[in-house]
Length: 497
Image (cartoon, rainbow, N blue to C red; front, side):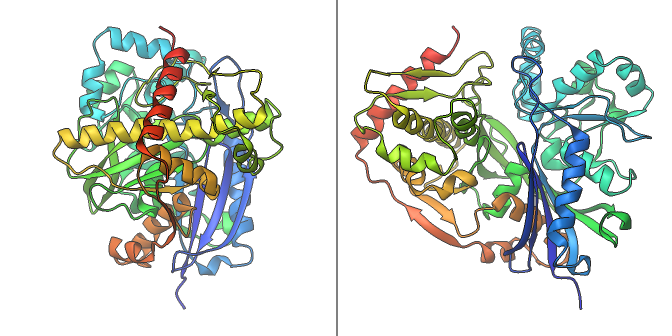
């Protein structure tokens, strides 16, 4: 009998996971390991690439232990995007820790590039803004700050890749250096119109082209995981950056369909079809996916701190013992409280793109307690989503496209019904939560399944997507607009003028 399962690797910011999905898109086995975070300087965030690989291999072996490798038709990979690894092509040894997407060390370099007038060109070619978030300036930093790295890169001895490339390289026994178009589109180095690496941008950032991986469609055979890893060779058959994977997992295949994923950060994407929208609101134009060589575009807004804010409440402030406790505490908060928490711990993402903003709490009184602060932290995620949705609606209207009328949500935070209702009330739009909320892993499984023939087309994926619950707005418009005005004032206070 033919294998009917997909092993989906989800290498995220705070953990490495493996989930096995059956042919109906249902998870049947999983394993997970938490990933150590390193903060060597203010605003710096790093991971150990070797730990990422070892943990990924371990969770994959654990997830397939009861299923058996003979049942695995292919491997799908989804990953934290923009996180940058540079390694030796021959030995596979990283030359430096992975610089994480949250890292802000290249803020001054980005400011210098803007001052030199380069941002318009980067925005036109890549759809991105000059921000430390993206990979290009991280690669340049490694080449400039690790002894001998630039000379080795110019000799063709070093590879650059996002986490997907790093995993493929190791899965294939150091044979394959490749990525997919969704990850490539997040580097500041890839032209999303020509669908190729851009030599002019490479020259500006001083990144040698020989370092770069080959770019394939998300649904493609990238290589074969060698037998020593799982006991039999298995094709690596799909790759999608985490937010594009969630877009596929949420079956957002028609223009105007929008999803928002609430993990470490919050990332909202709306499908714009064949139209590459030039945002007037500092949103990102990006590749949603590319099947059969035909790109579909999206507008994206990125919030750096969502679930990570809840982690901060737990680990740094000691206000909660677990993330699950946040829902009950938020319900206890005084509804008349006007406390706002702006979680700009690593700056602010879209639509502000302010790397110098810092975390701020405003509106506290003697009556303010931990319930009000926890409530404000969860509400902050909803307010930031409103920032993004309003900006997307305006950009799509300018482009002659229909703005989204509902929001499909996923990620760890949406298990919290209270949060989903606050989100609906803040946006004034219905919130649709799917039956399977692990849509990032599911999207990677769908891509791999399309490659190996478990799914014939995206129509099969749409047929699998199922709704769990819809949350309709319950608050009046004056409440919504009043609360949002308070949020906008708090954001102004958090920004460095």
